Length: 241
Ligand code: G3P
Ligand code: MG
Image (cartoon, rainbow, N blue to C red):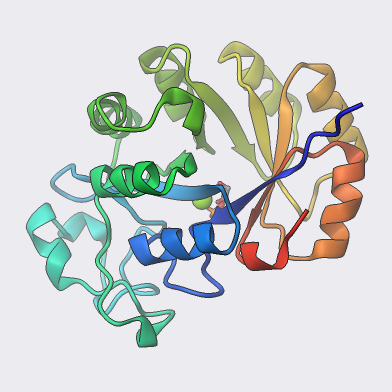
């Protein structure tokens, strides 16, 4: 009998070790043993898809204000190392640069489509589509995910045959309905609210369960026993199976 190992994914890279959502962060996550990473794609004001979590620059960069104020030309001047200043200058990566980095490393990516208020759902999917579909990663090494149901429905139509996951804080009936509608492969559920029953219900519907954000090895062991398949962690260096 073979037992499938859980998939440890960096959460935004390895933010306990290196600036989140930067190329350095992804390389660090890979060196720490994560063969996959979760990351966030957002749109700048000029529509460029970049790897960035927040709607504003305040927490992670040396600037403040909305990312809608940024365009592609600004990226080499905005330092995204705020959480780890010793890392030196770290640019916000474009989605294209991040995909090249994942391909070079041989990493898989759980790409969270992050819709901020300045971006309509269709604009986000339309901007990501050409970059991802002509990029270097085979679809087997990509999981598309989002909290936003409109984005998920559009992504399902735009990316036939690609794996897709619904992200949710709670495994509600509506989450299962949307998952069924878009033929989701997985639910990416919140660690804090996840129950054994959520895992069994998800698996009974033919989907896998990934959890965020899994930073406690003991709790991860229990969730492996429940049947959770993937764990997004800020500390991938702490997980060896
Ligand atoms: O993709 C799962 C997780 O990253 C969702 O929450 O806020 O970290 O993007 P957040
Ligand atoms: Mg995310």
